[in-house]
Picture (spheres, helix red, strand yellow):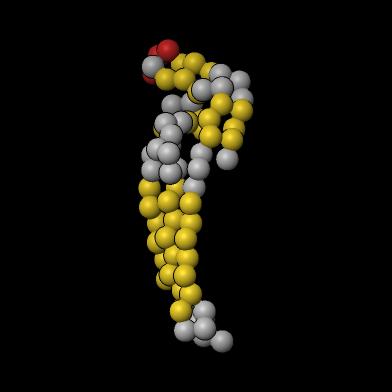
Length: 73
């Protein structure tokens, strides 16, 4: 994802919204038992970009999620 916007500055809380930033996410999944069981792993903010969507509210750095799903059909 690439976001472009106007720069904002808040000196009172020593922070700024940068004019642009890019995020890269990755997801990998694998199915077992004729795809009735699947596992997945997702890495968000792969490049550990420091950014804010709202002035003063820092977003998390790199983080990891995983999951398991079962299809009963």
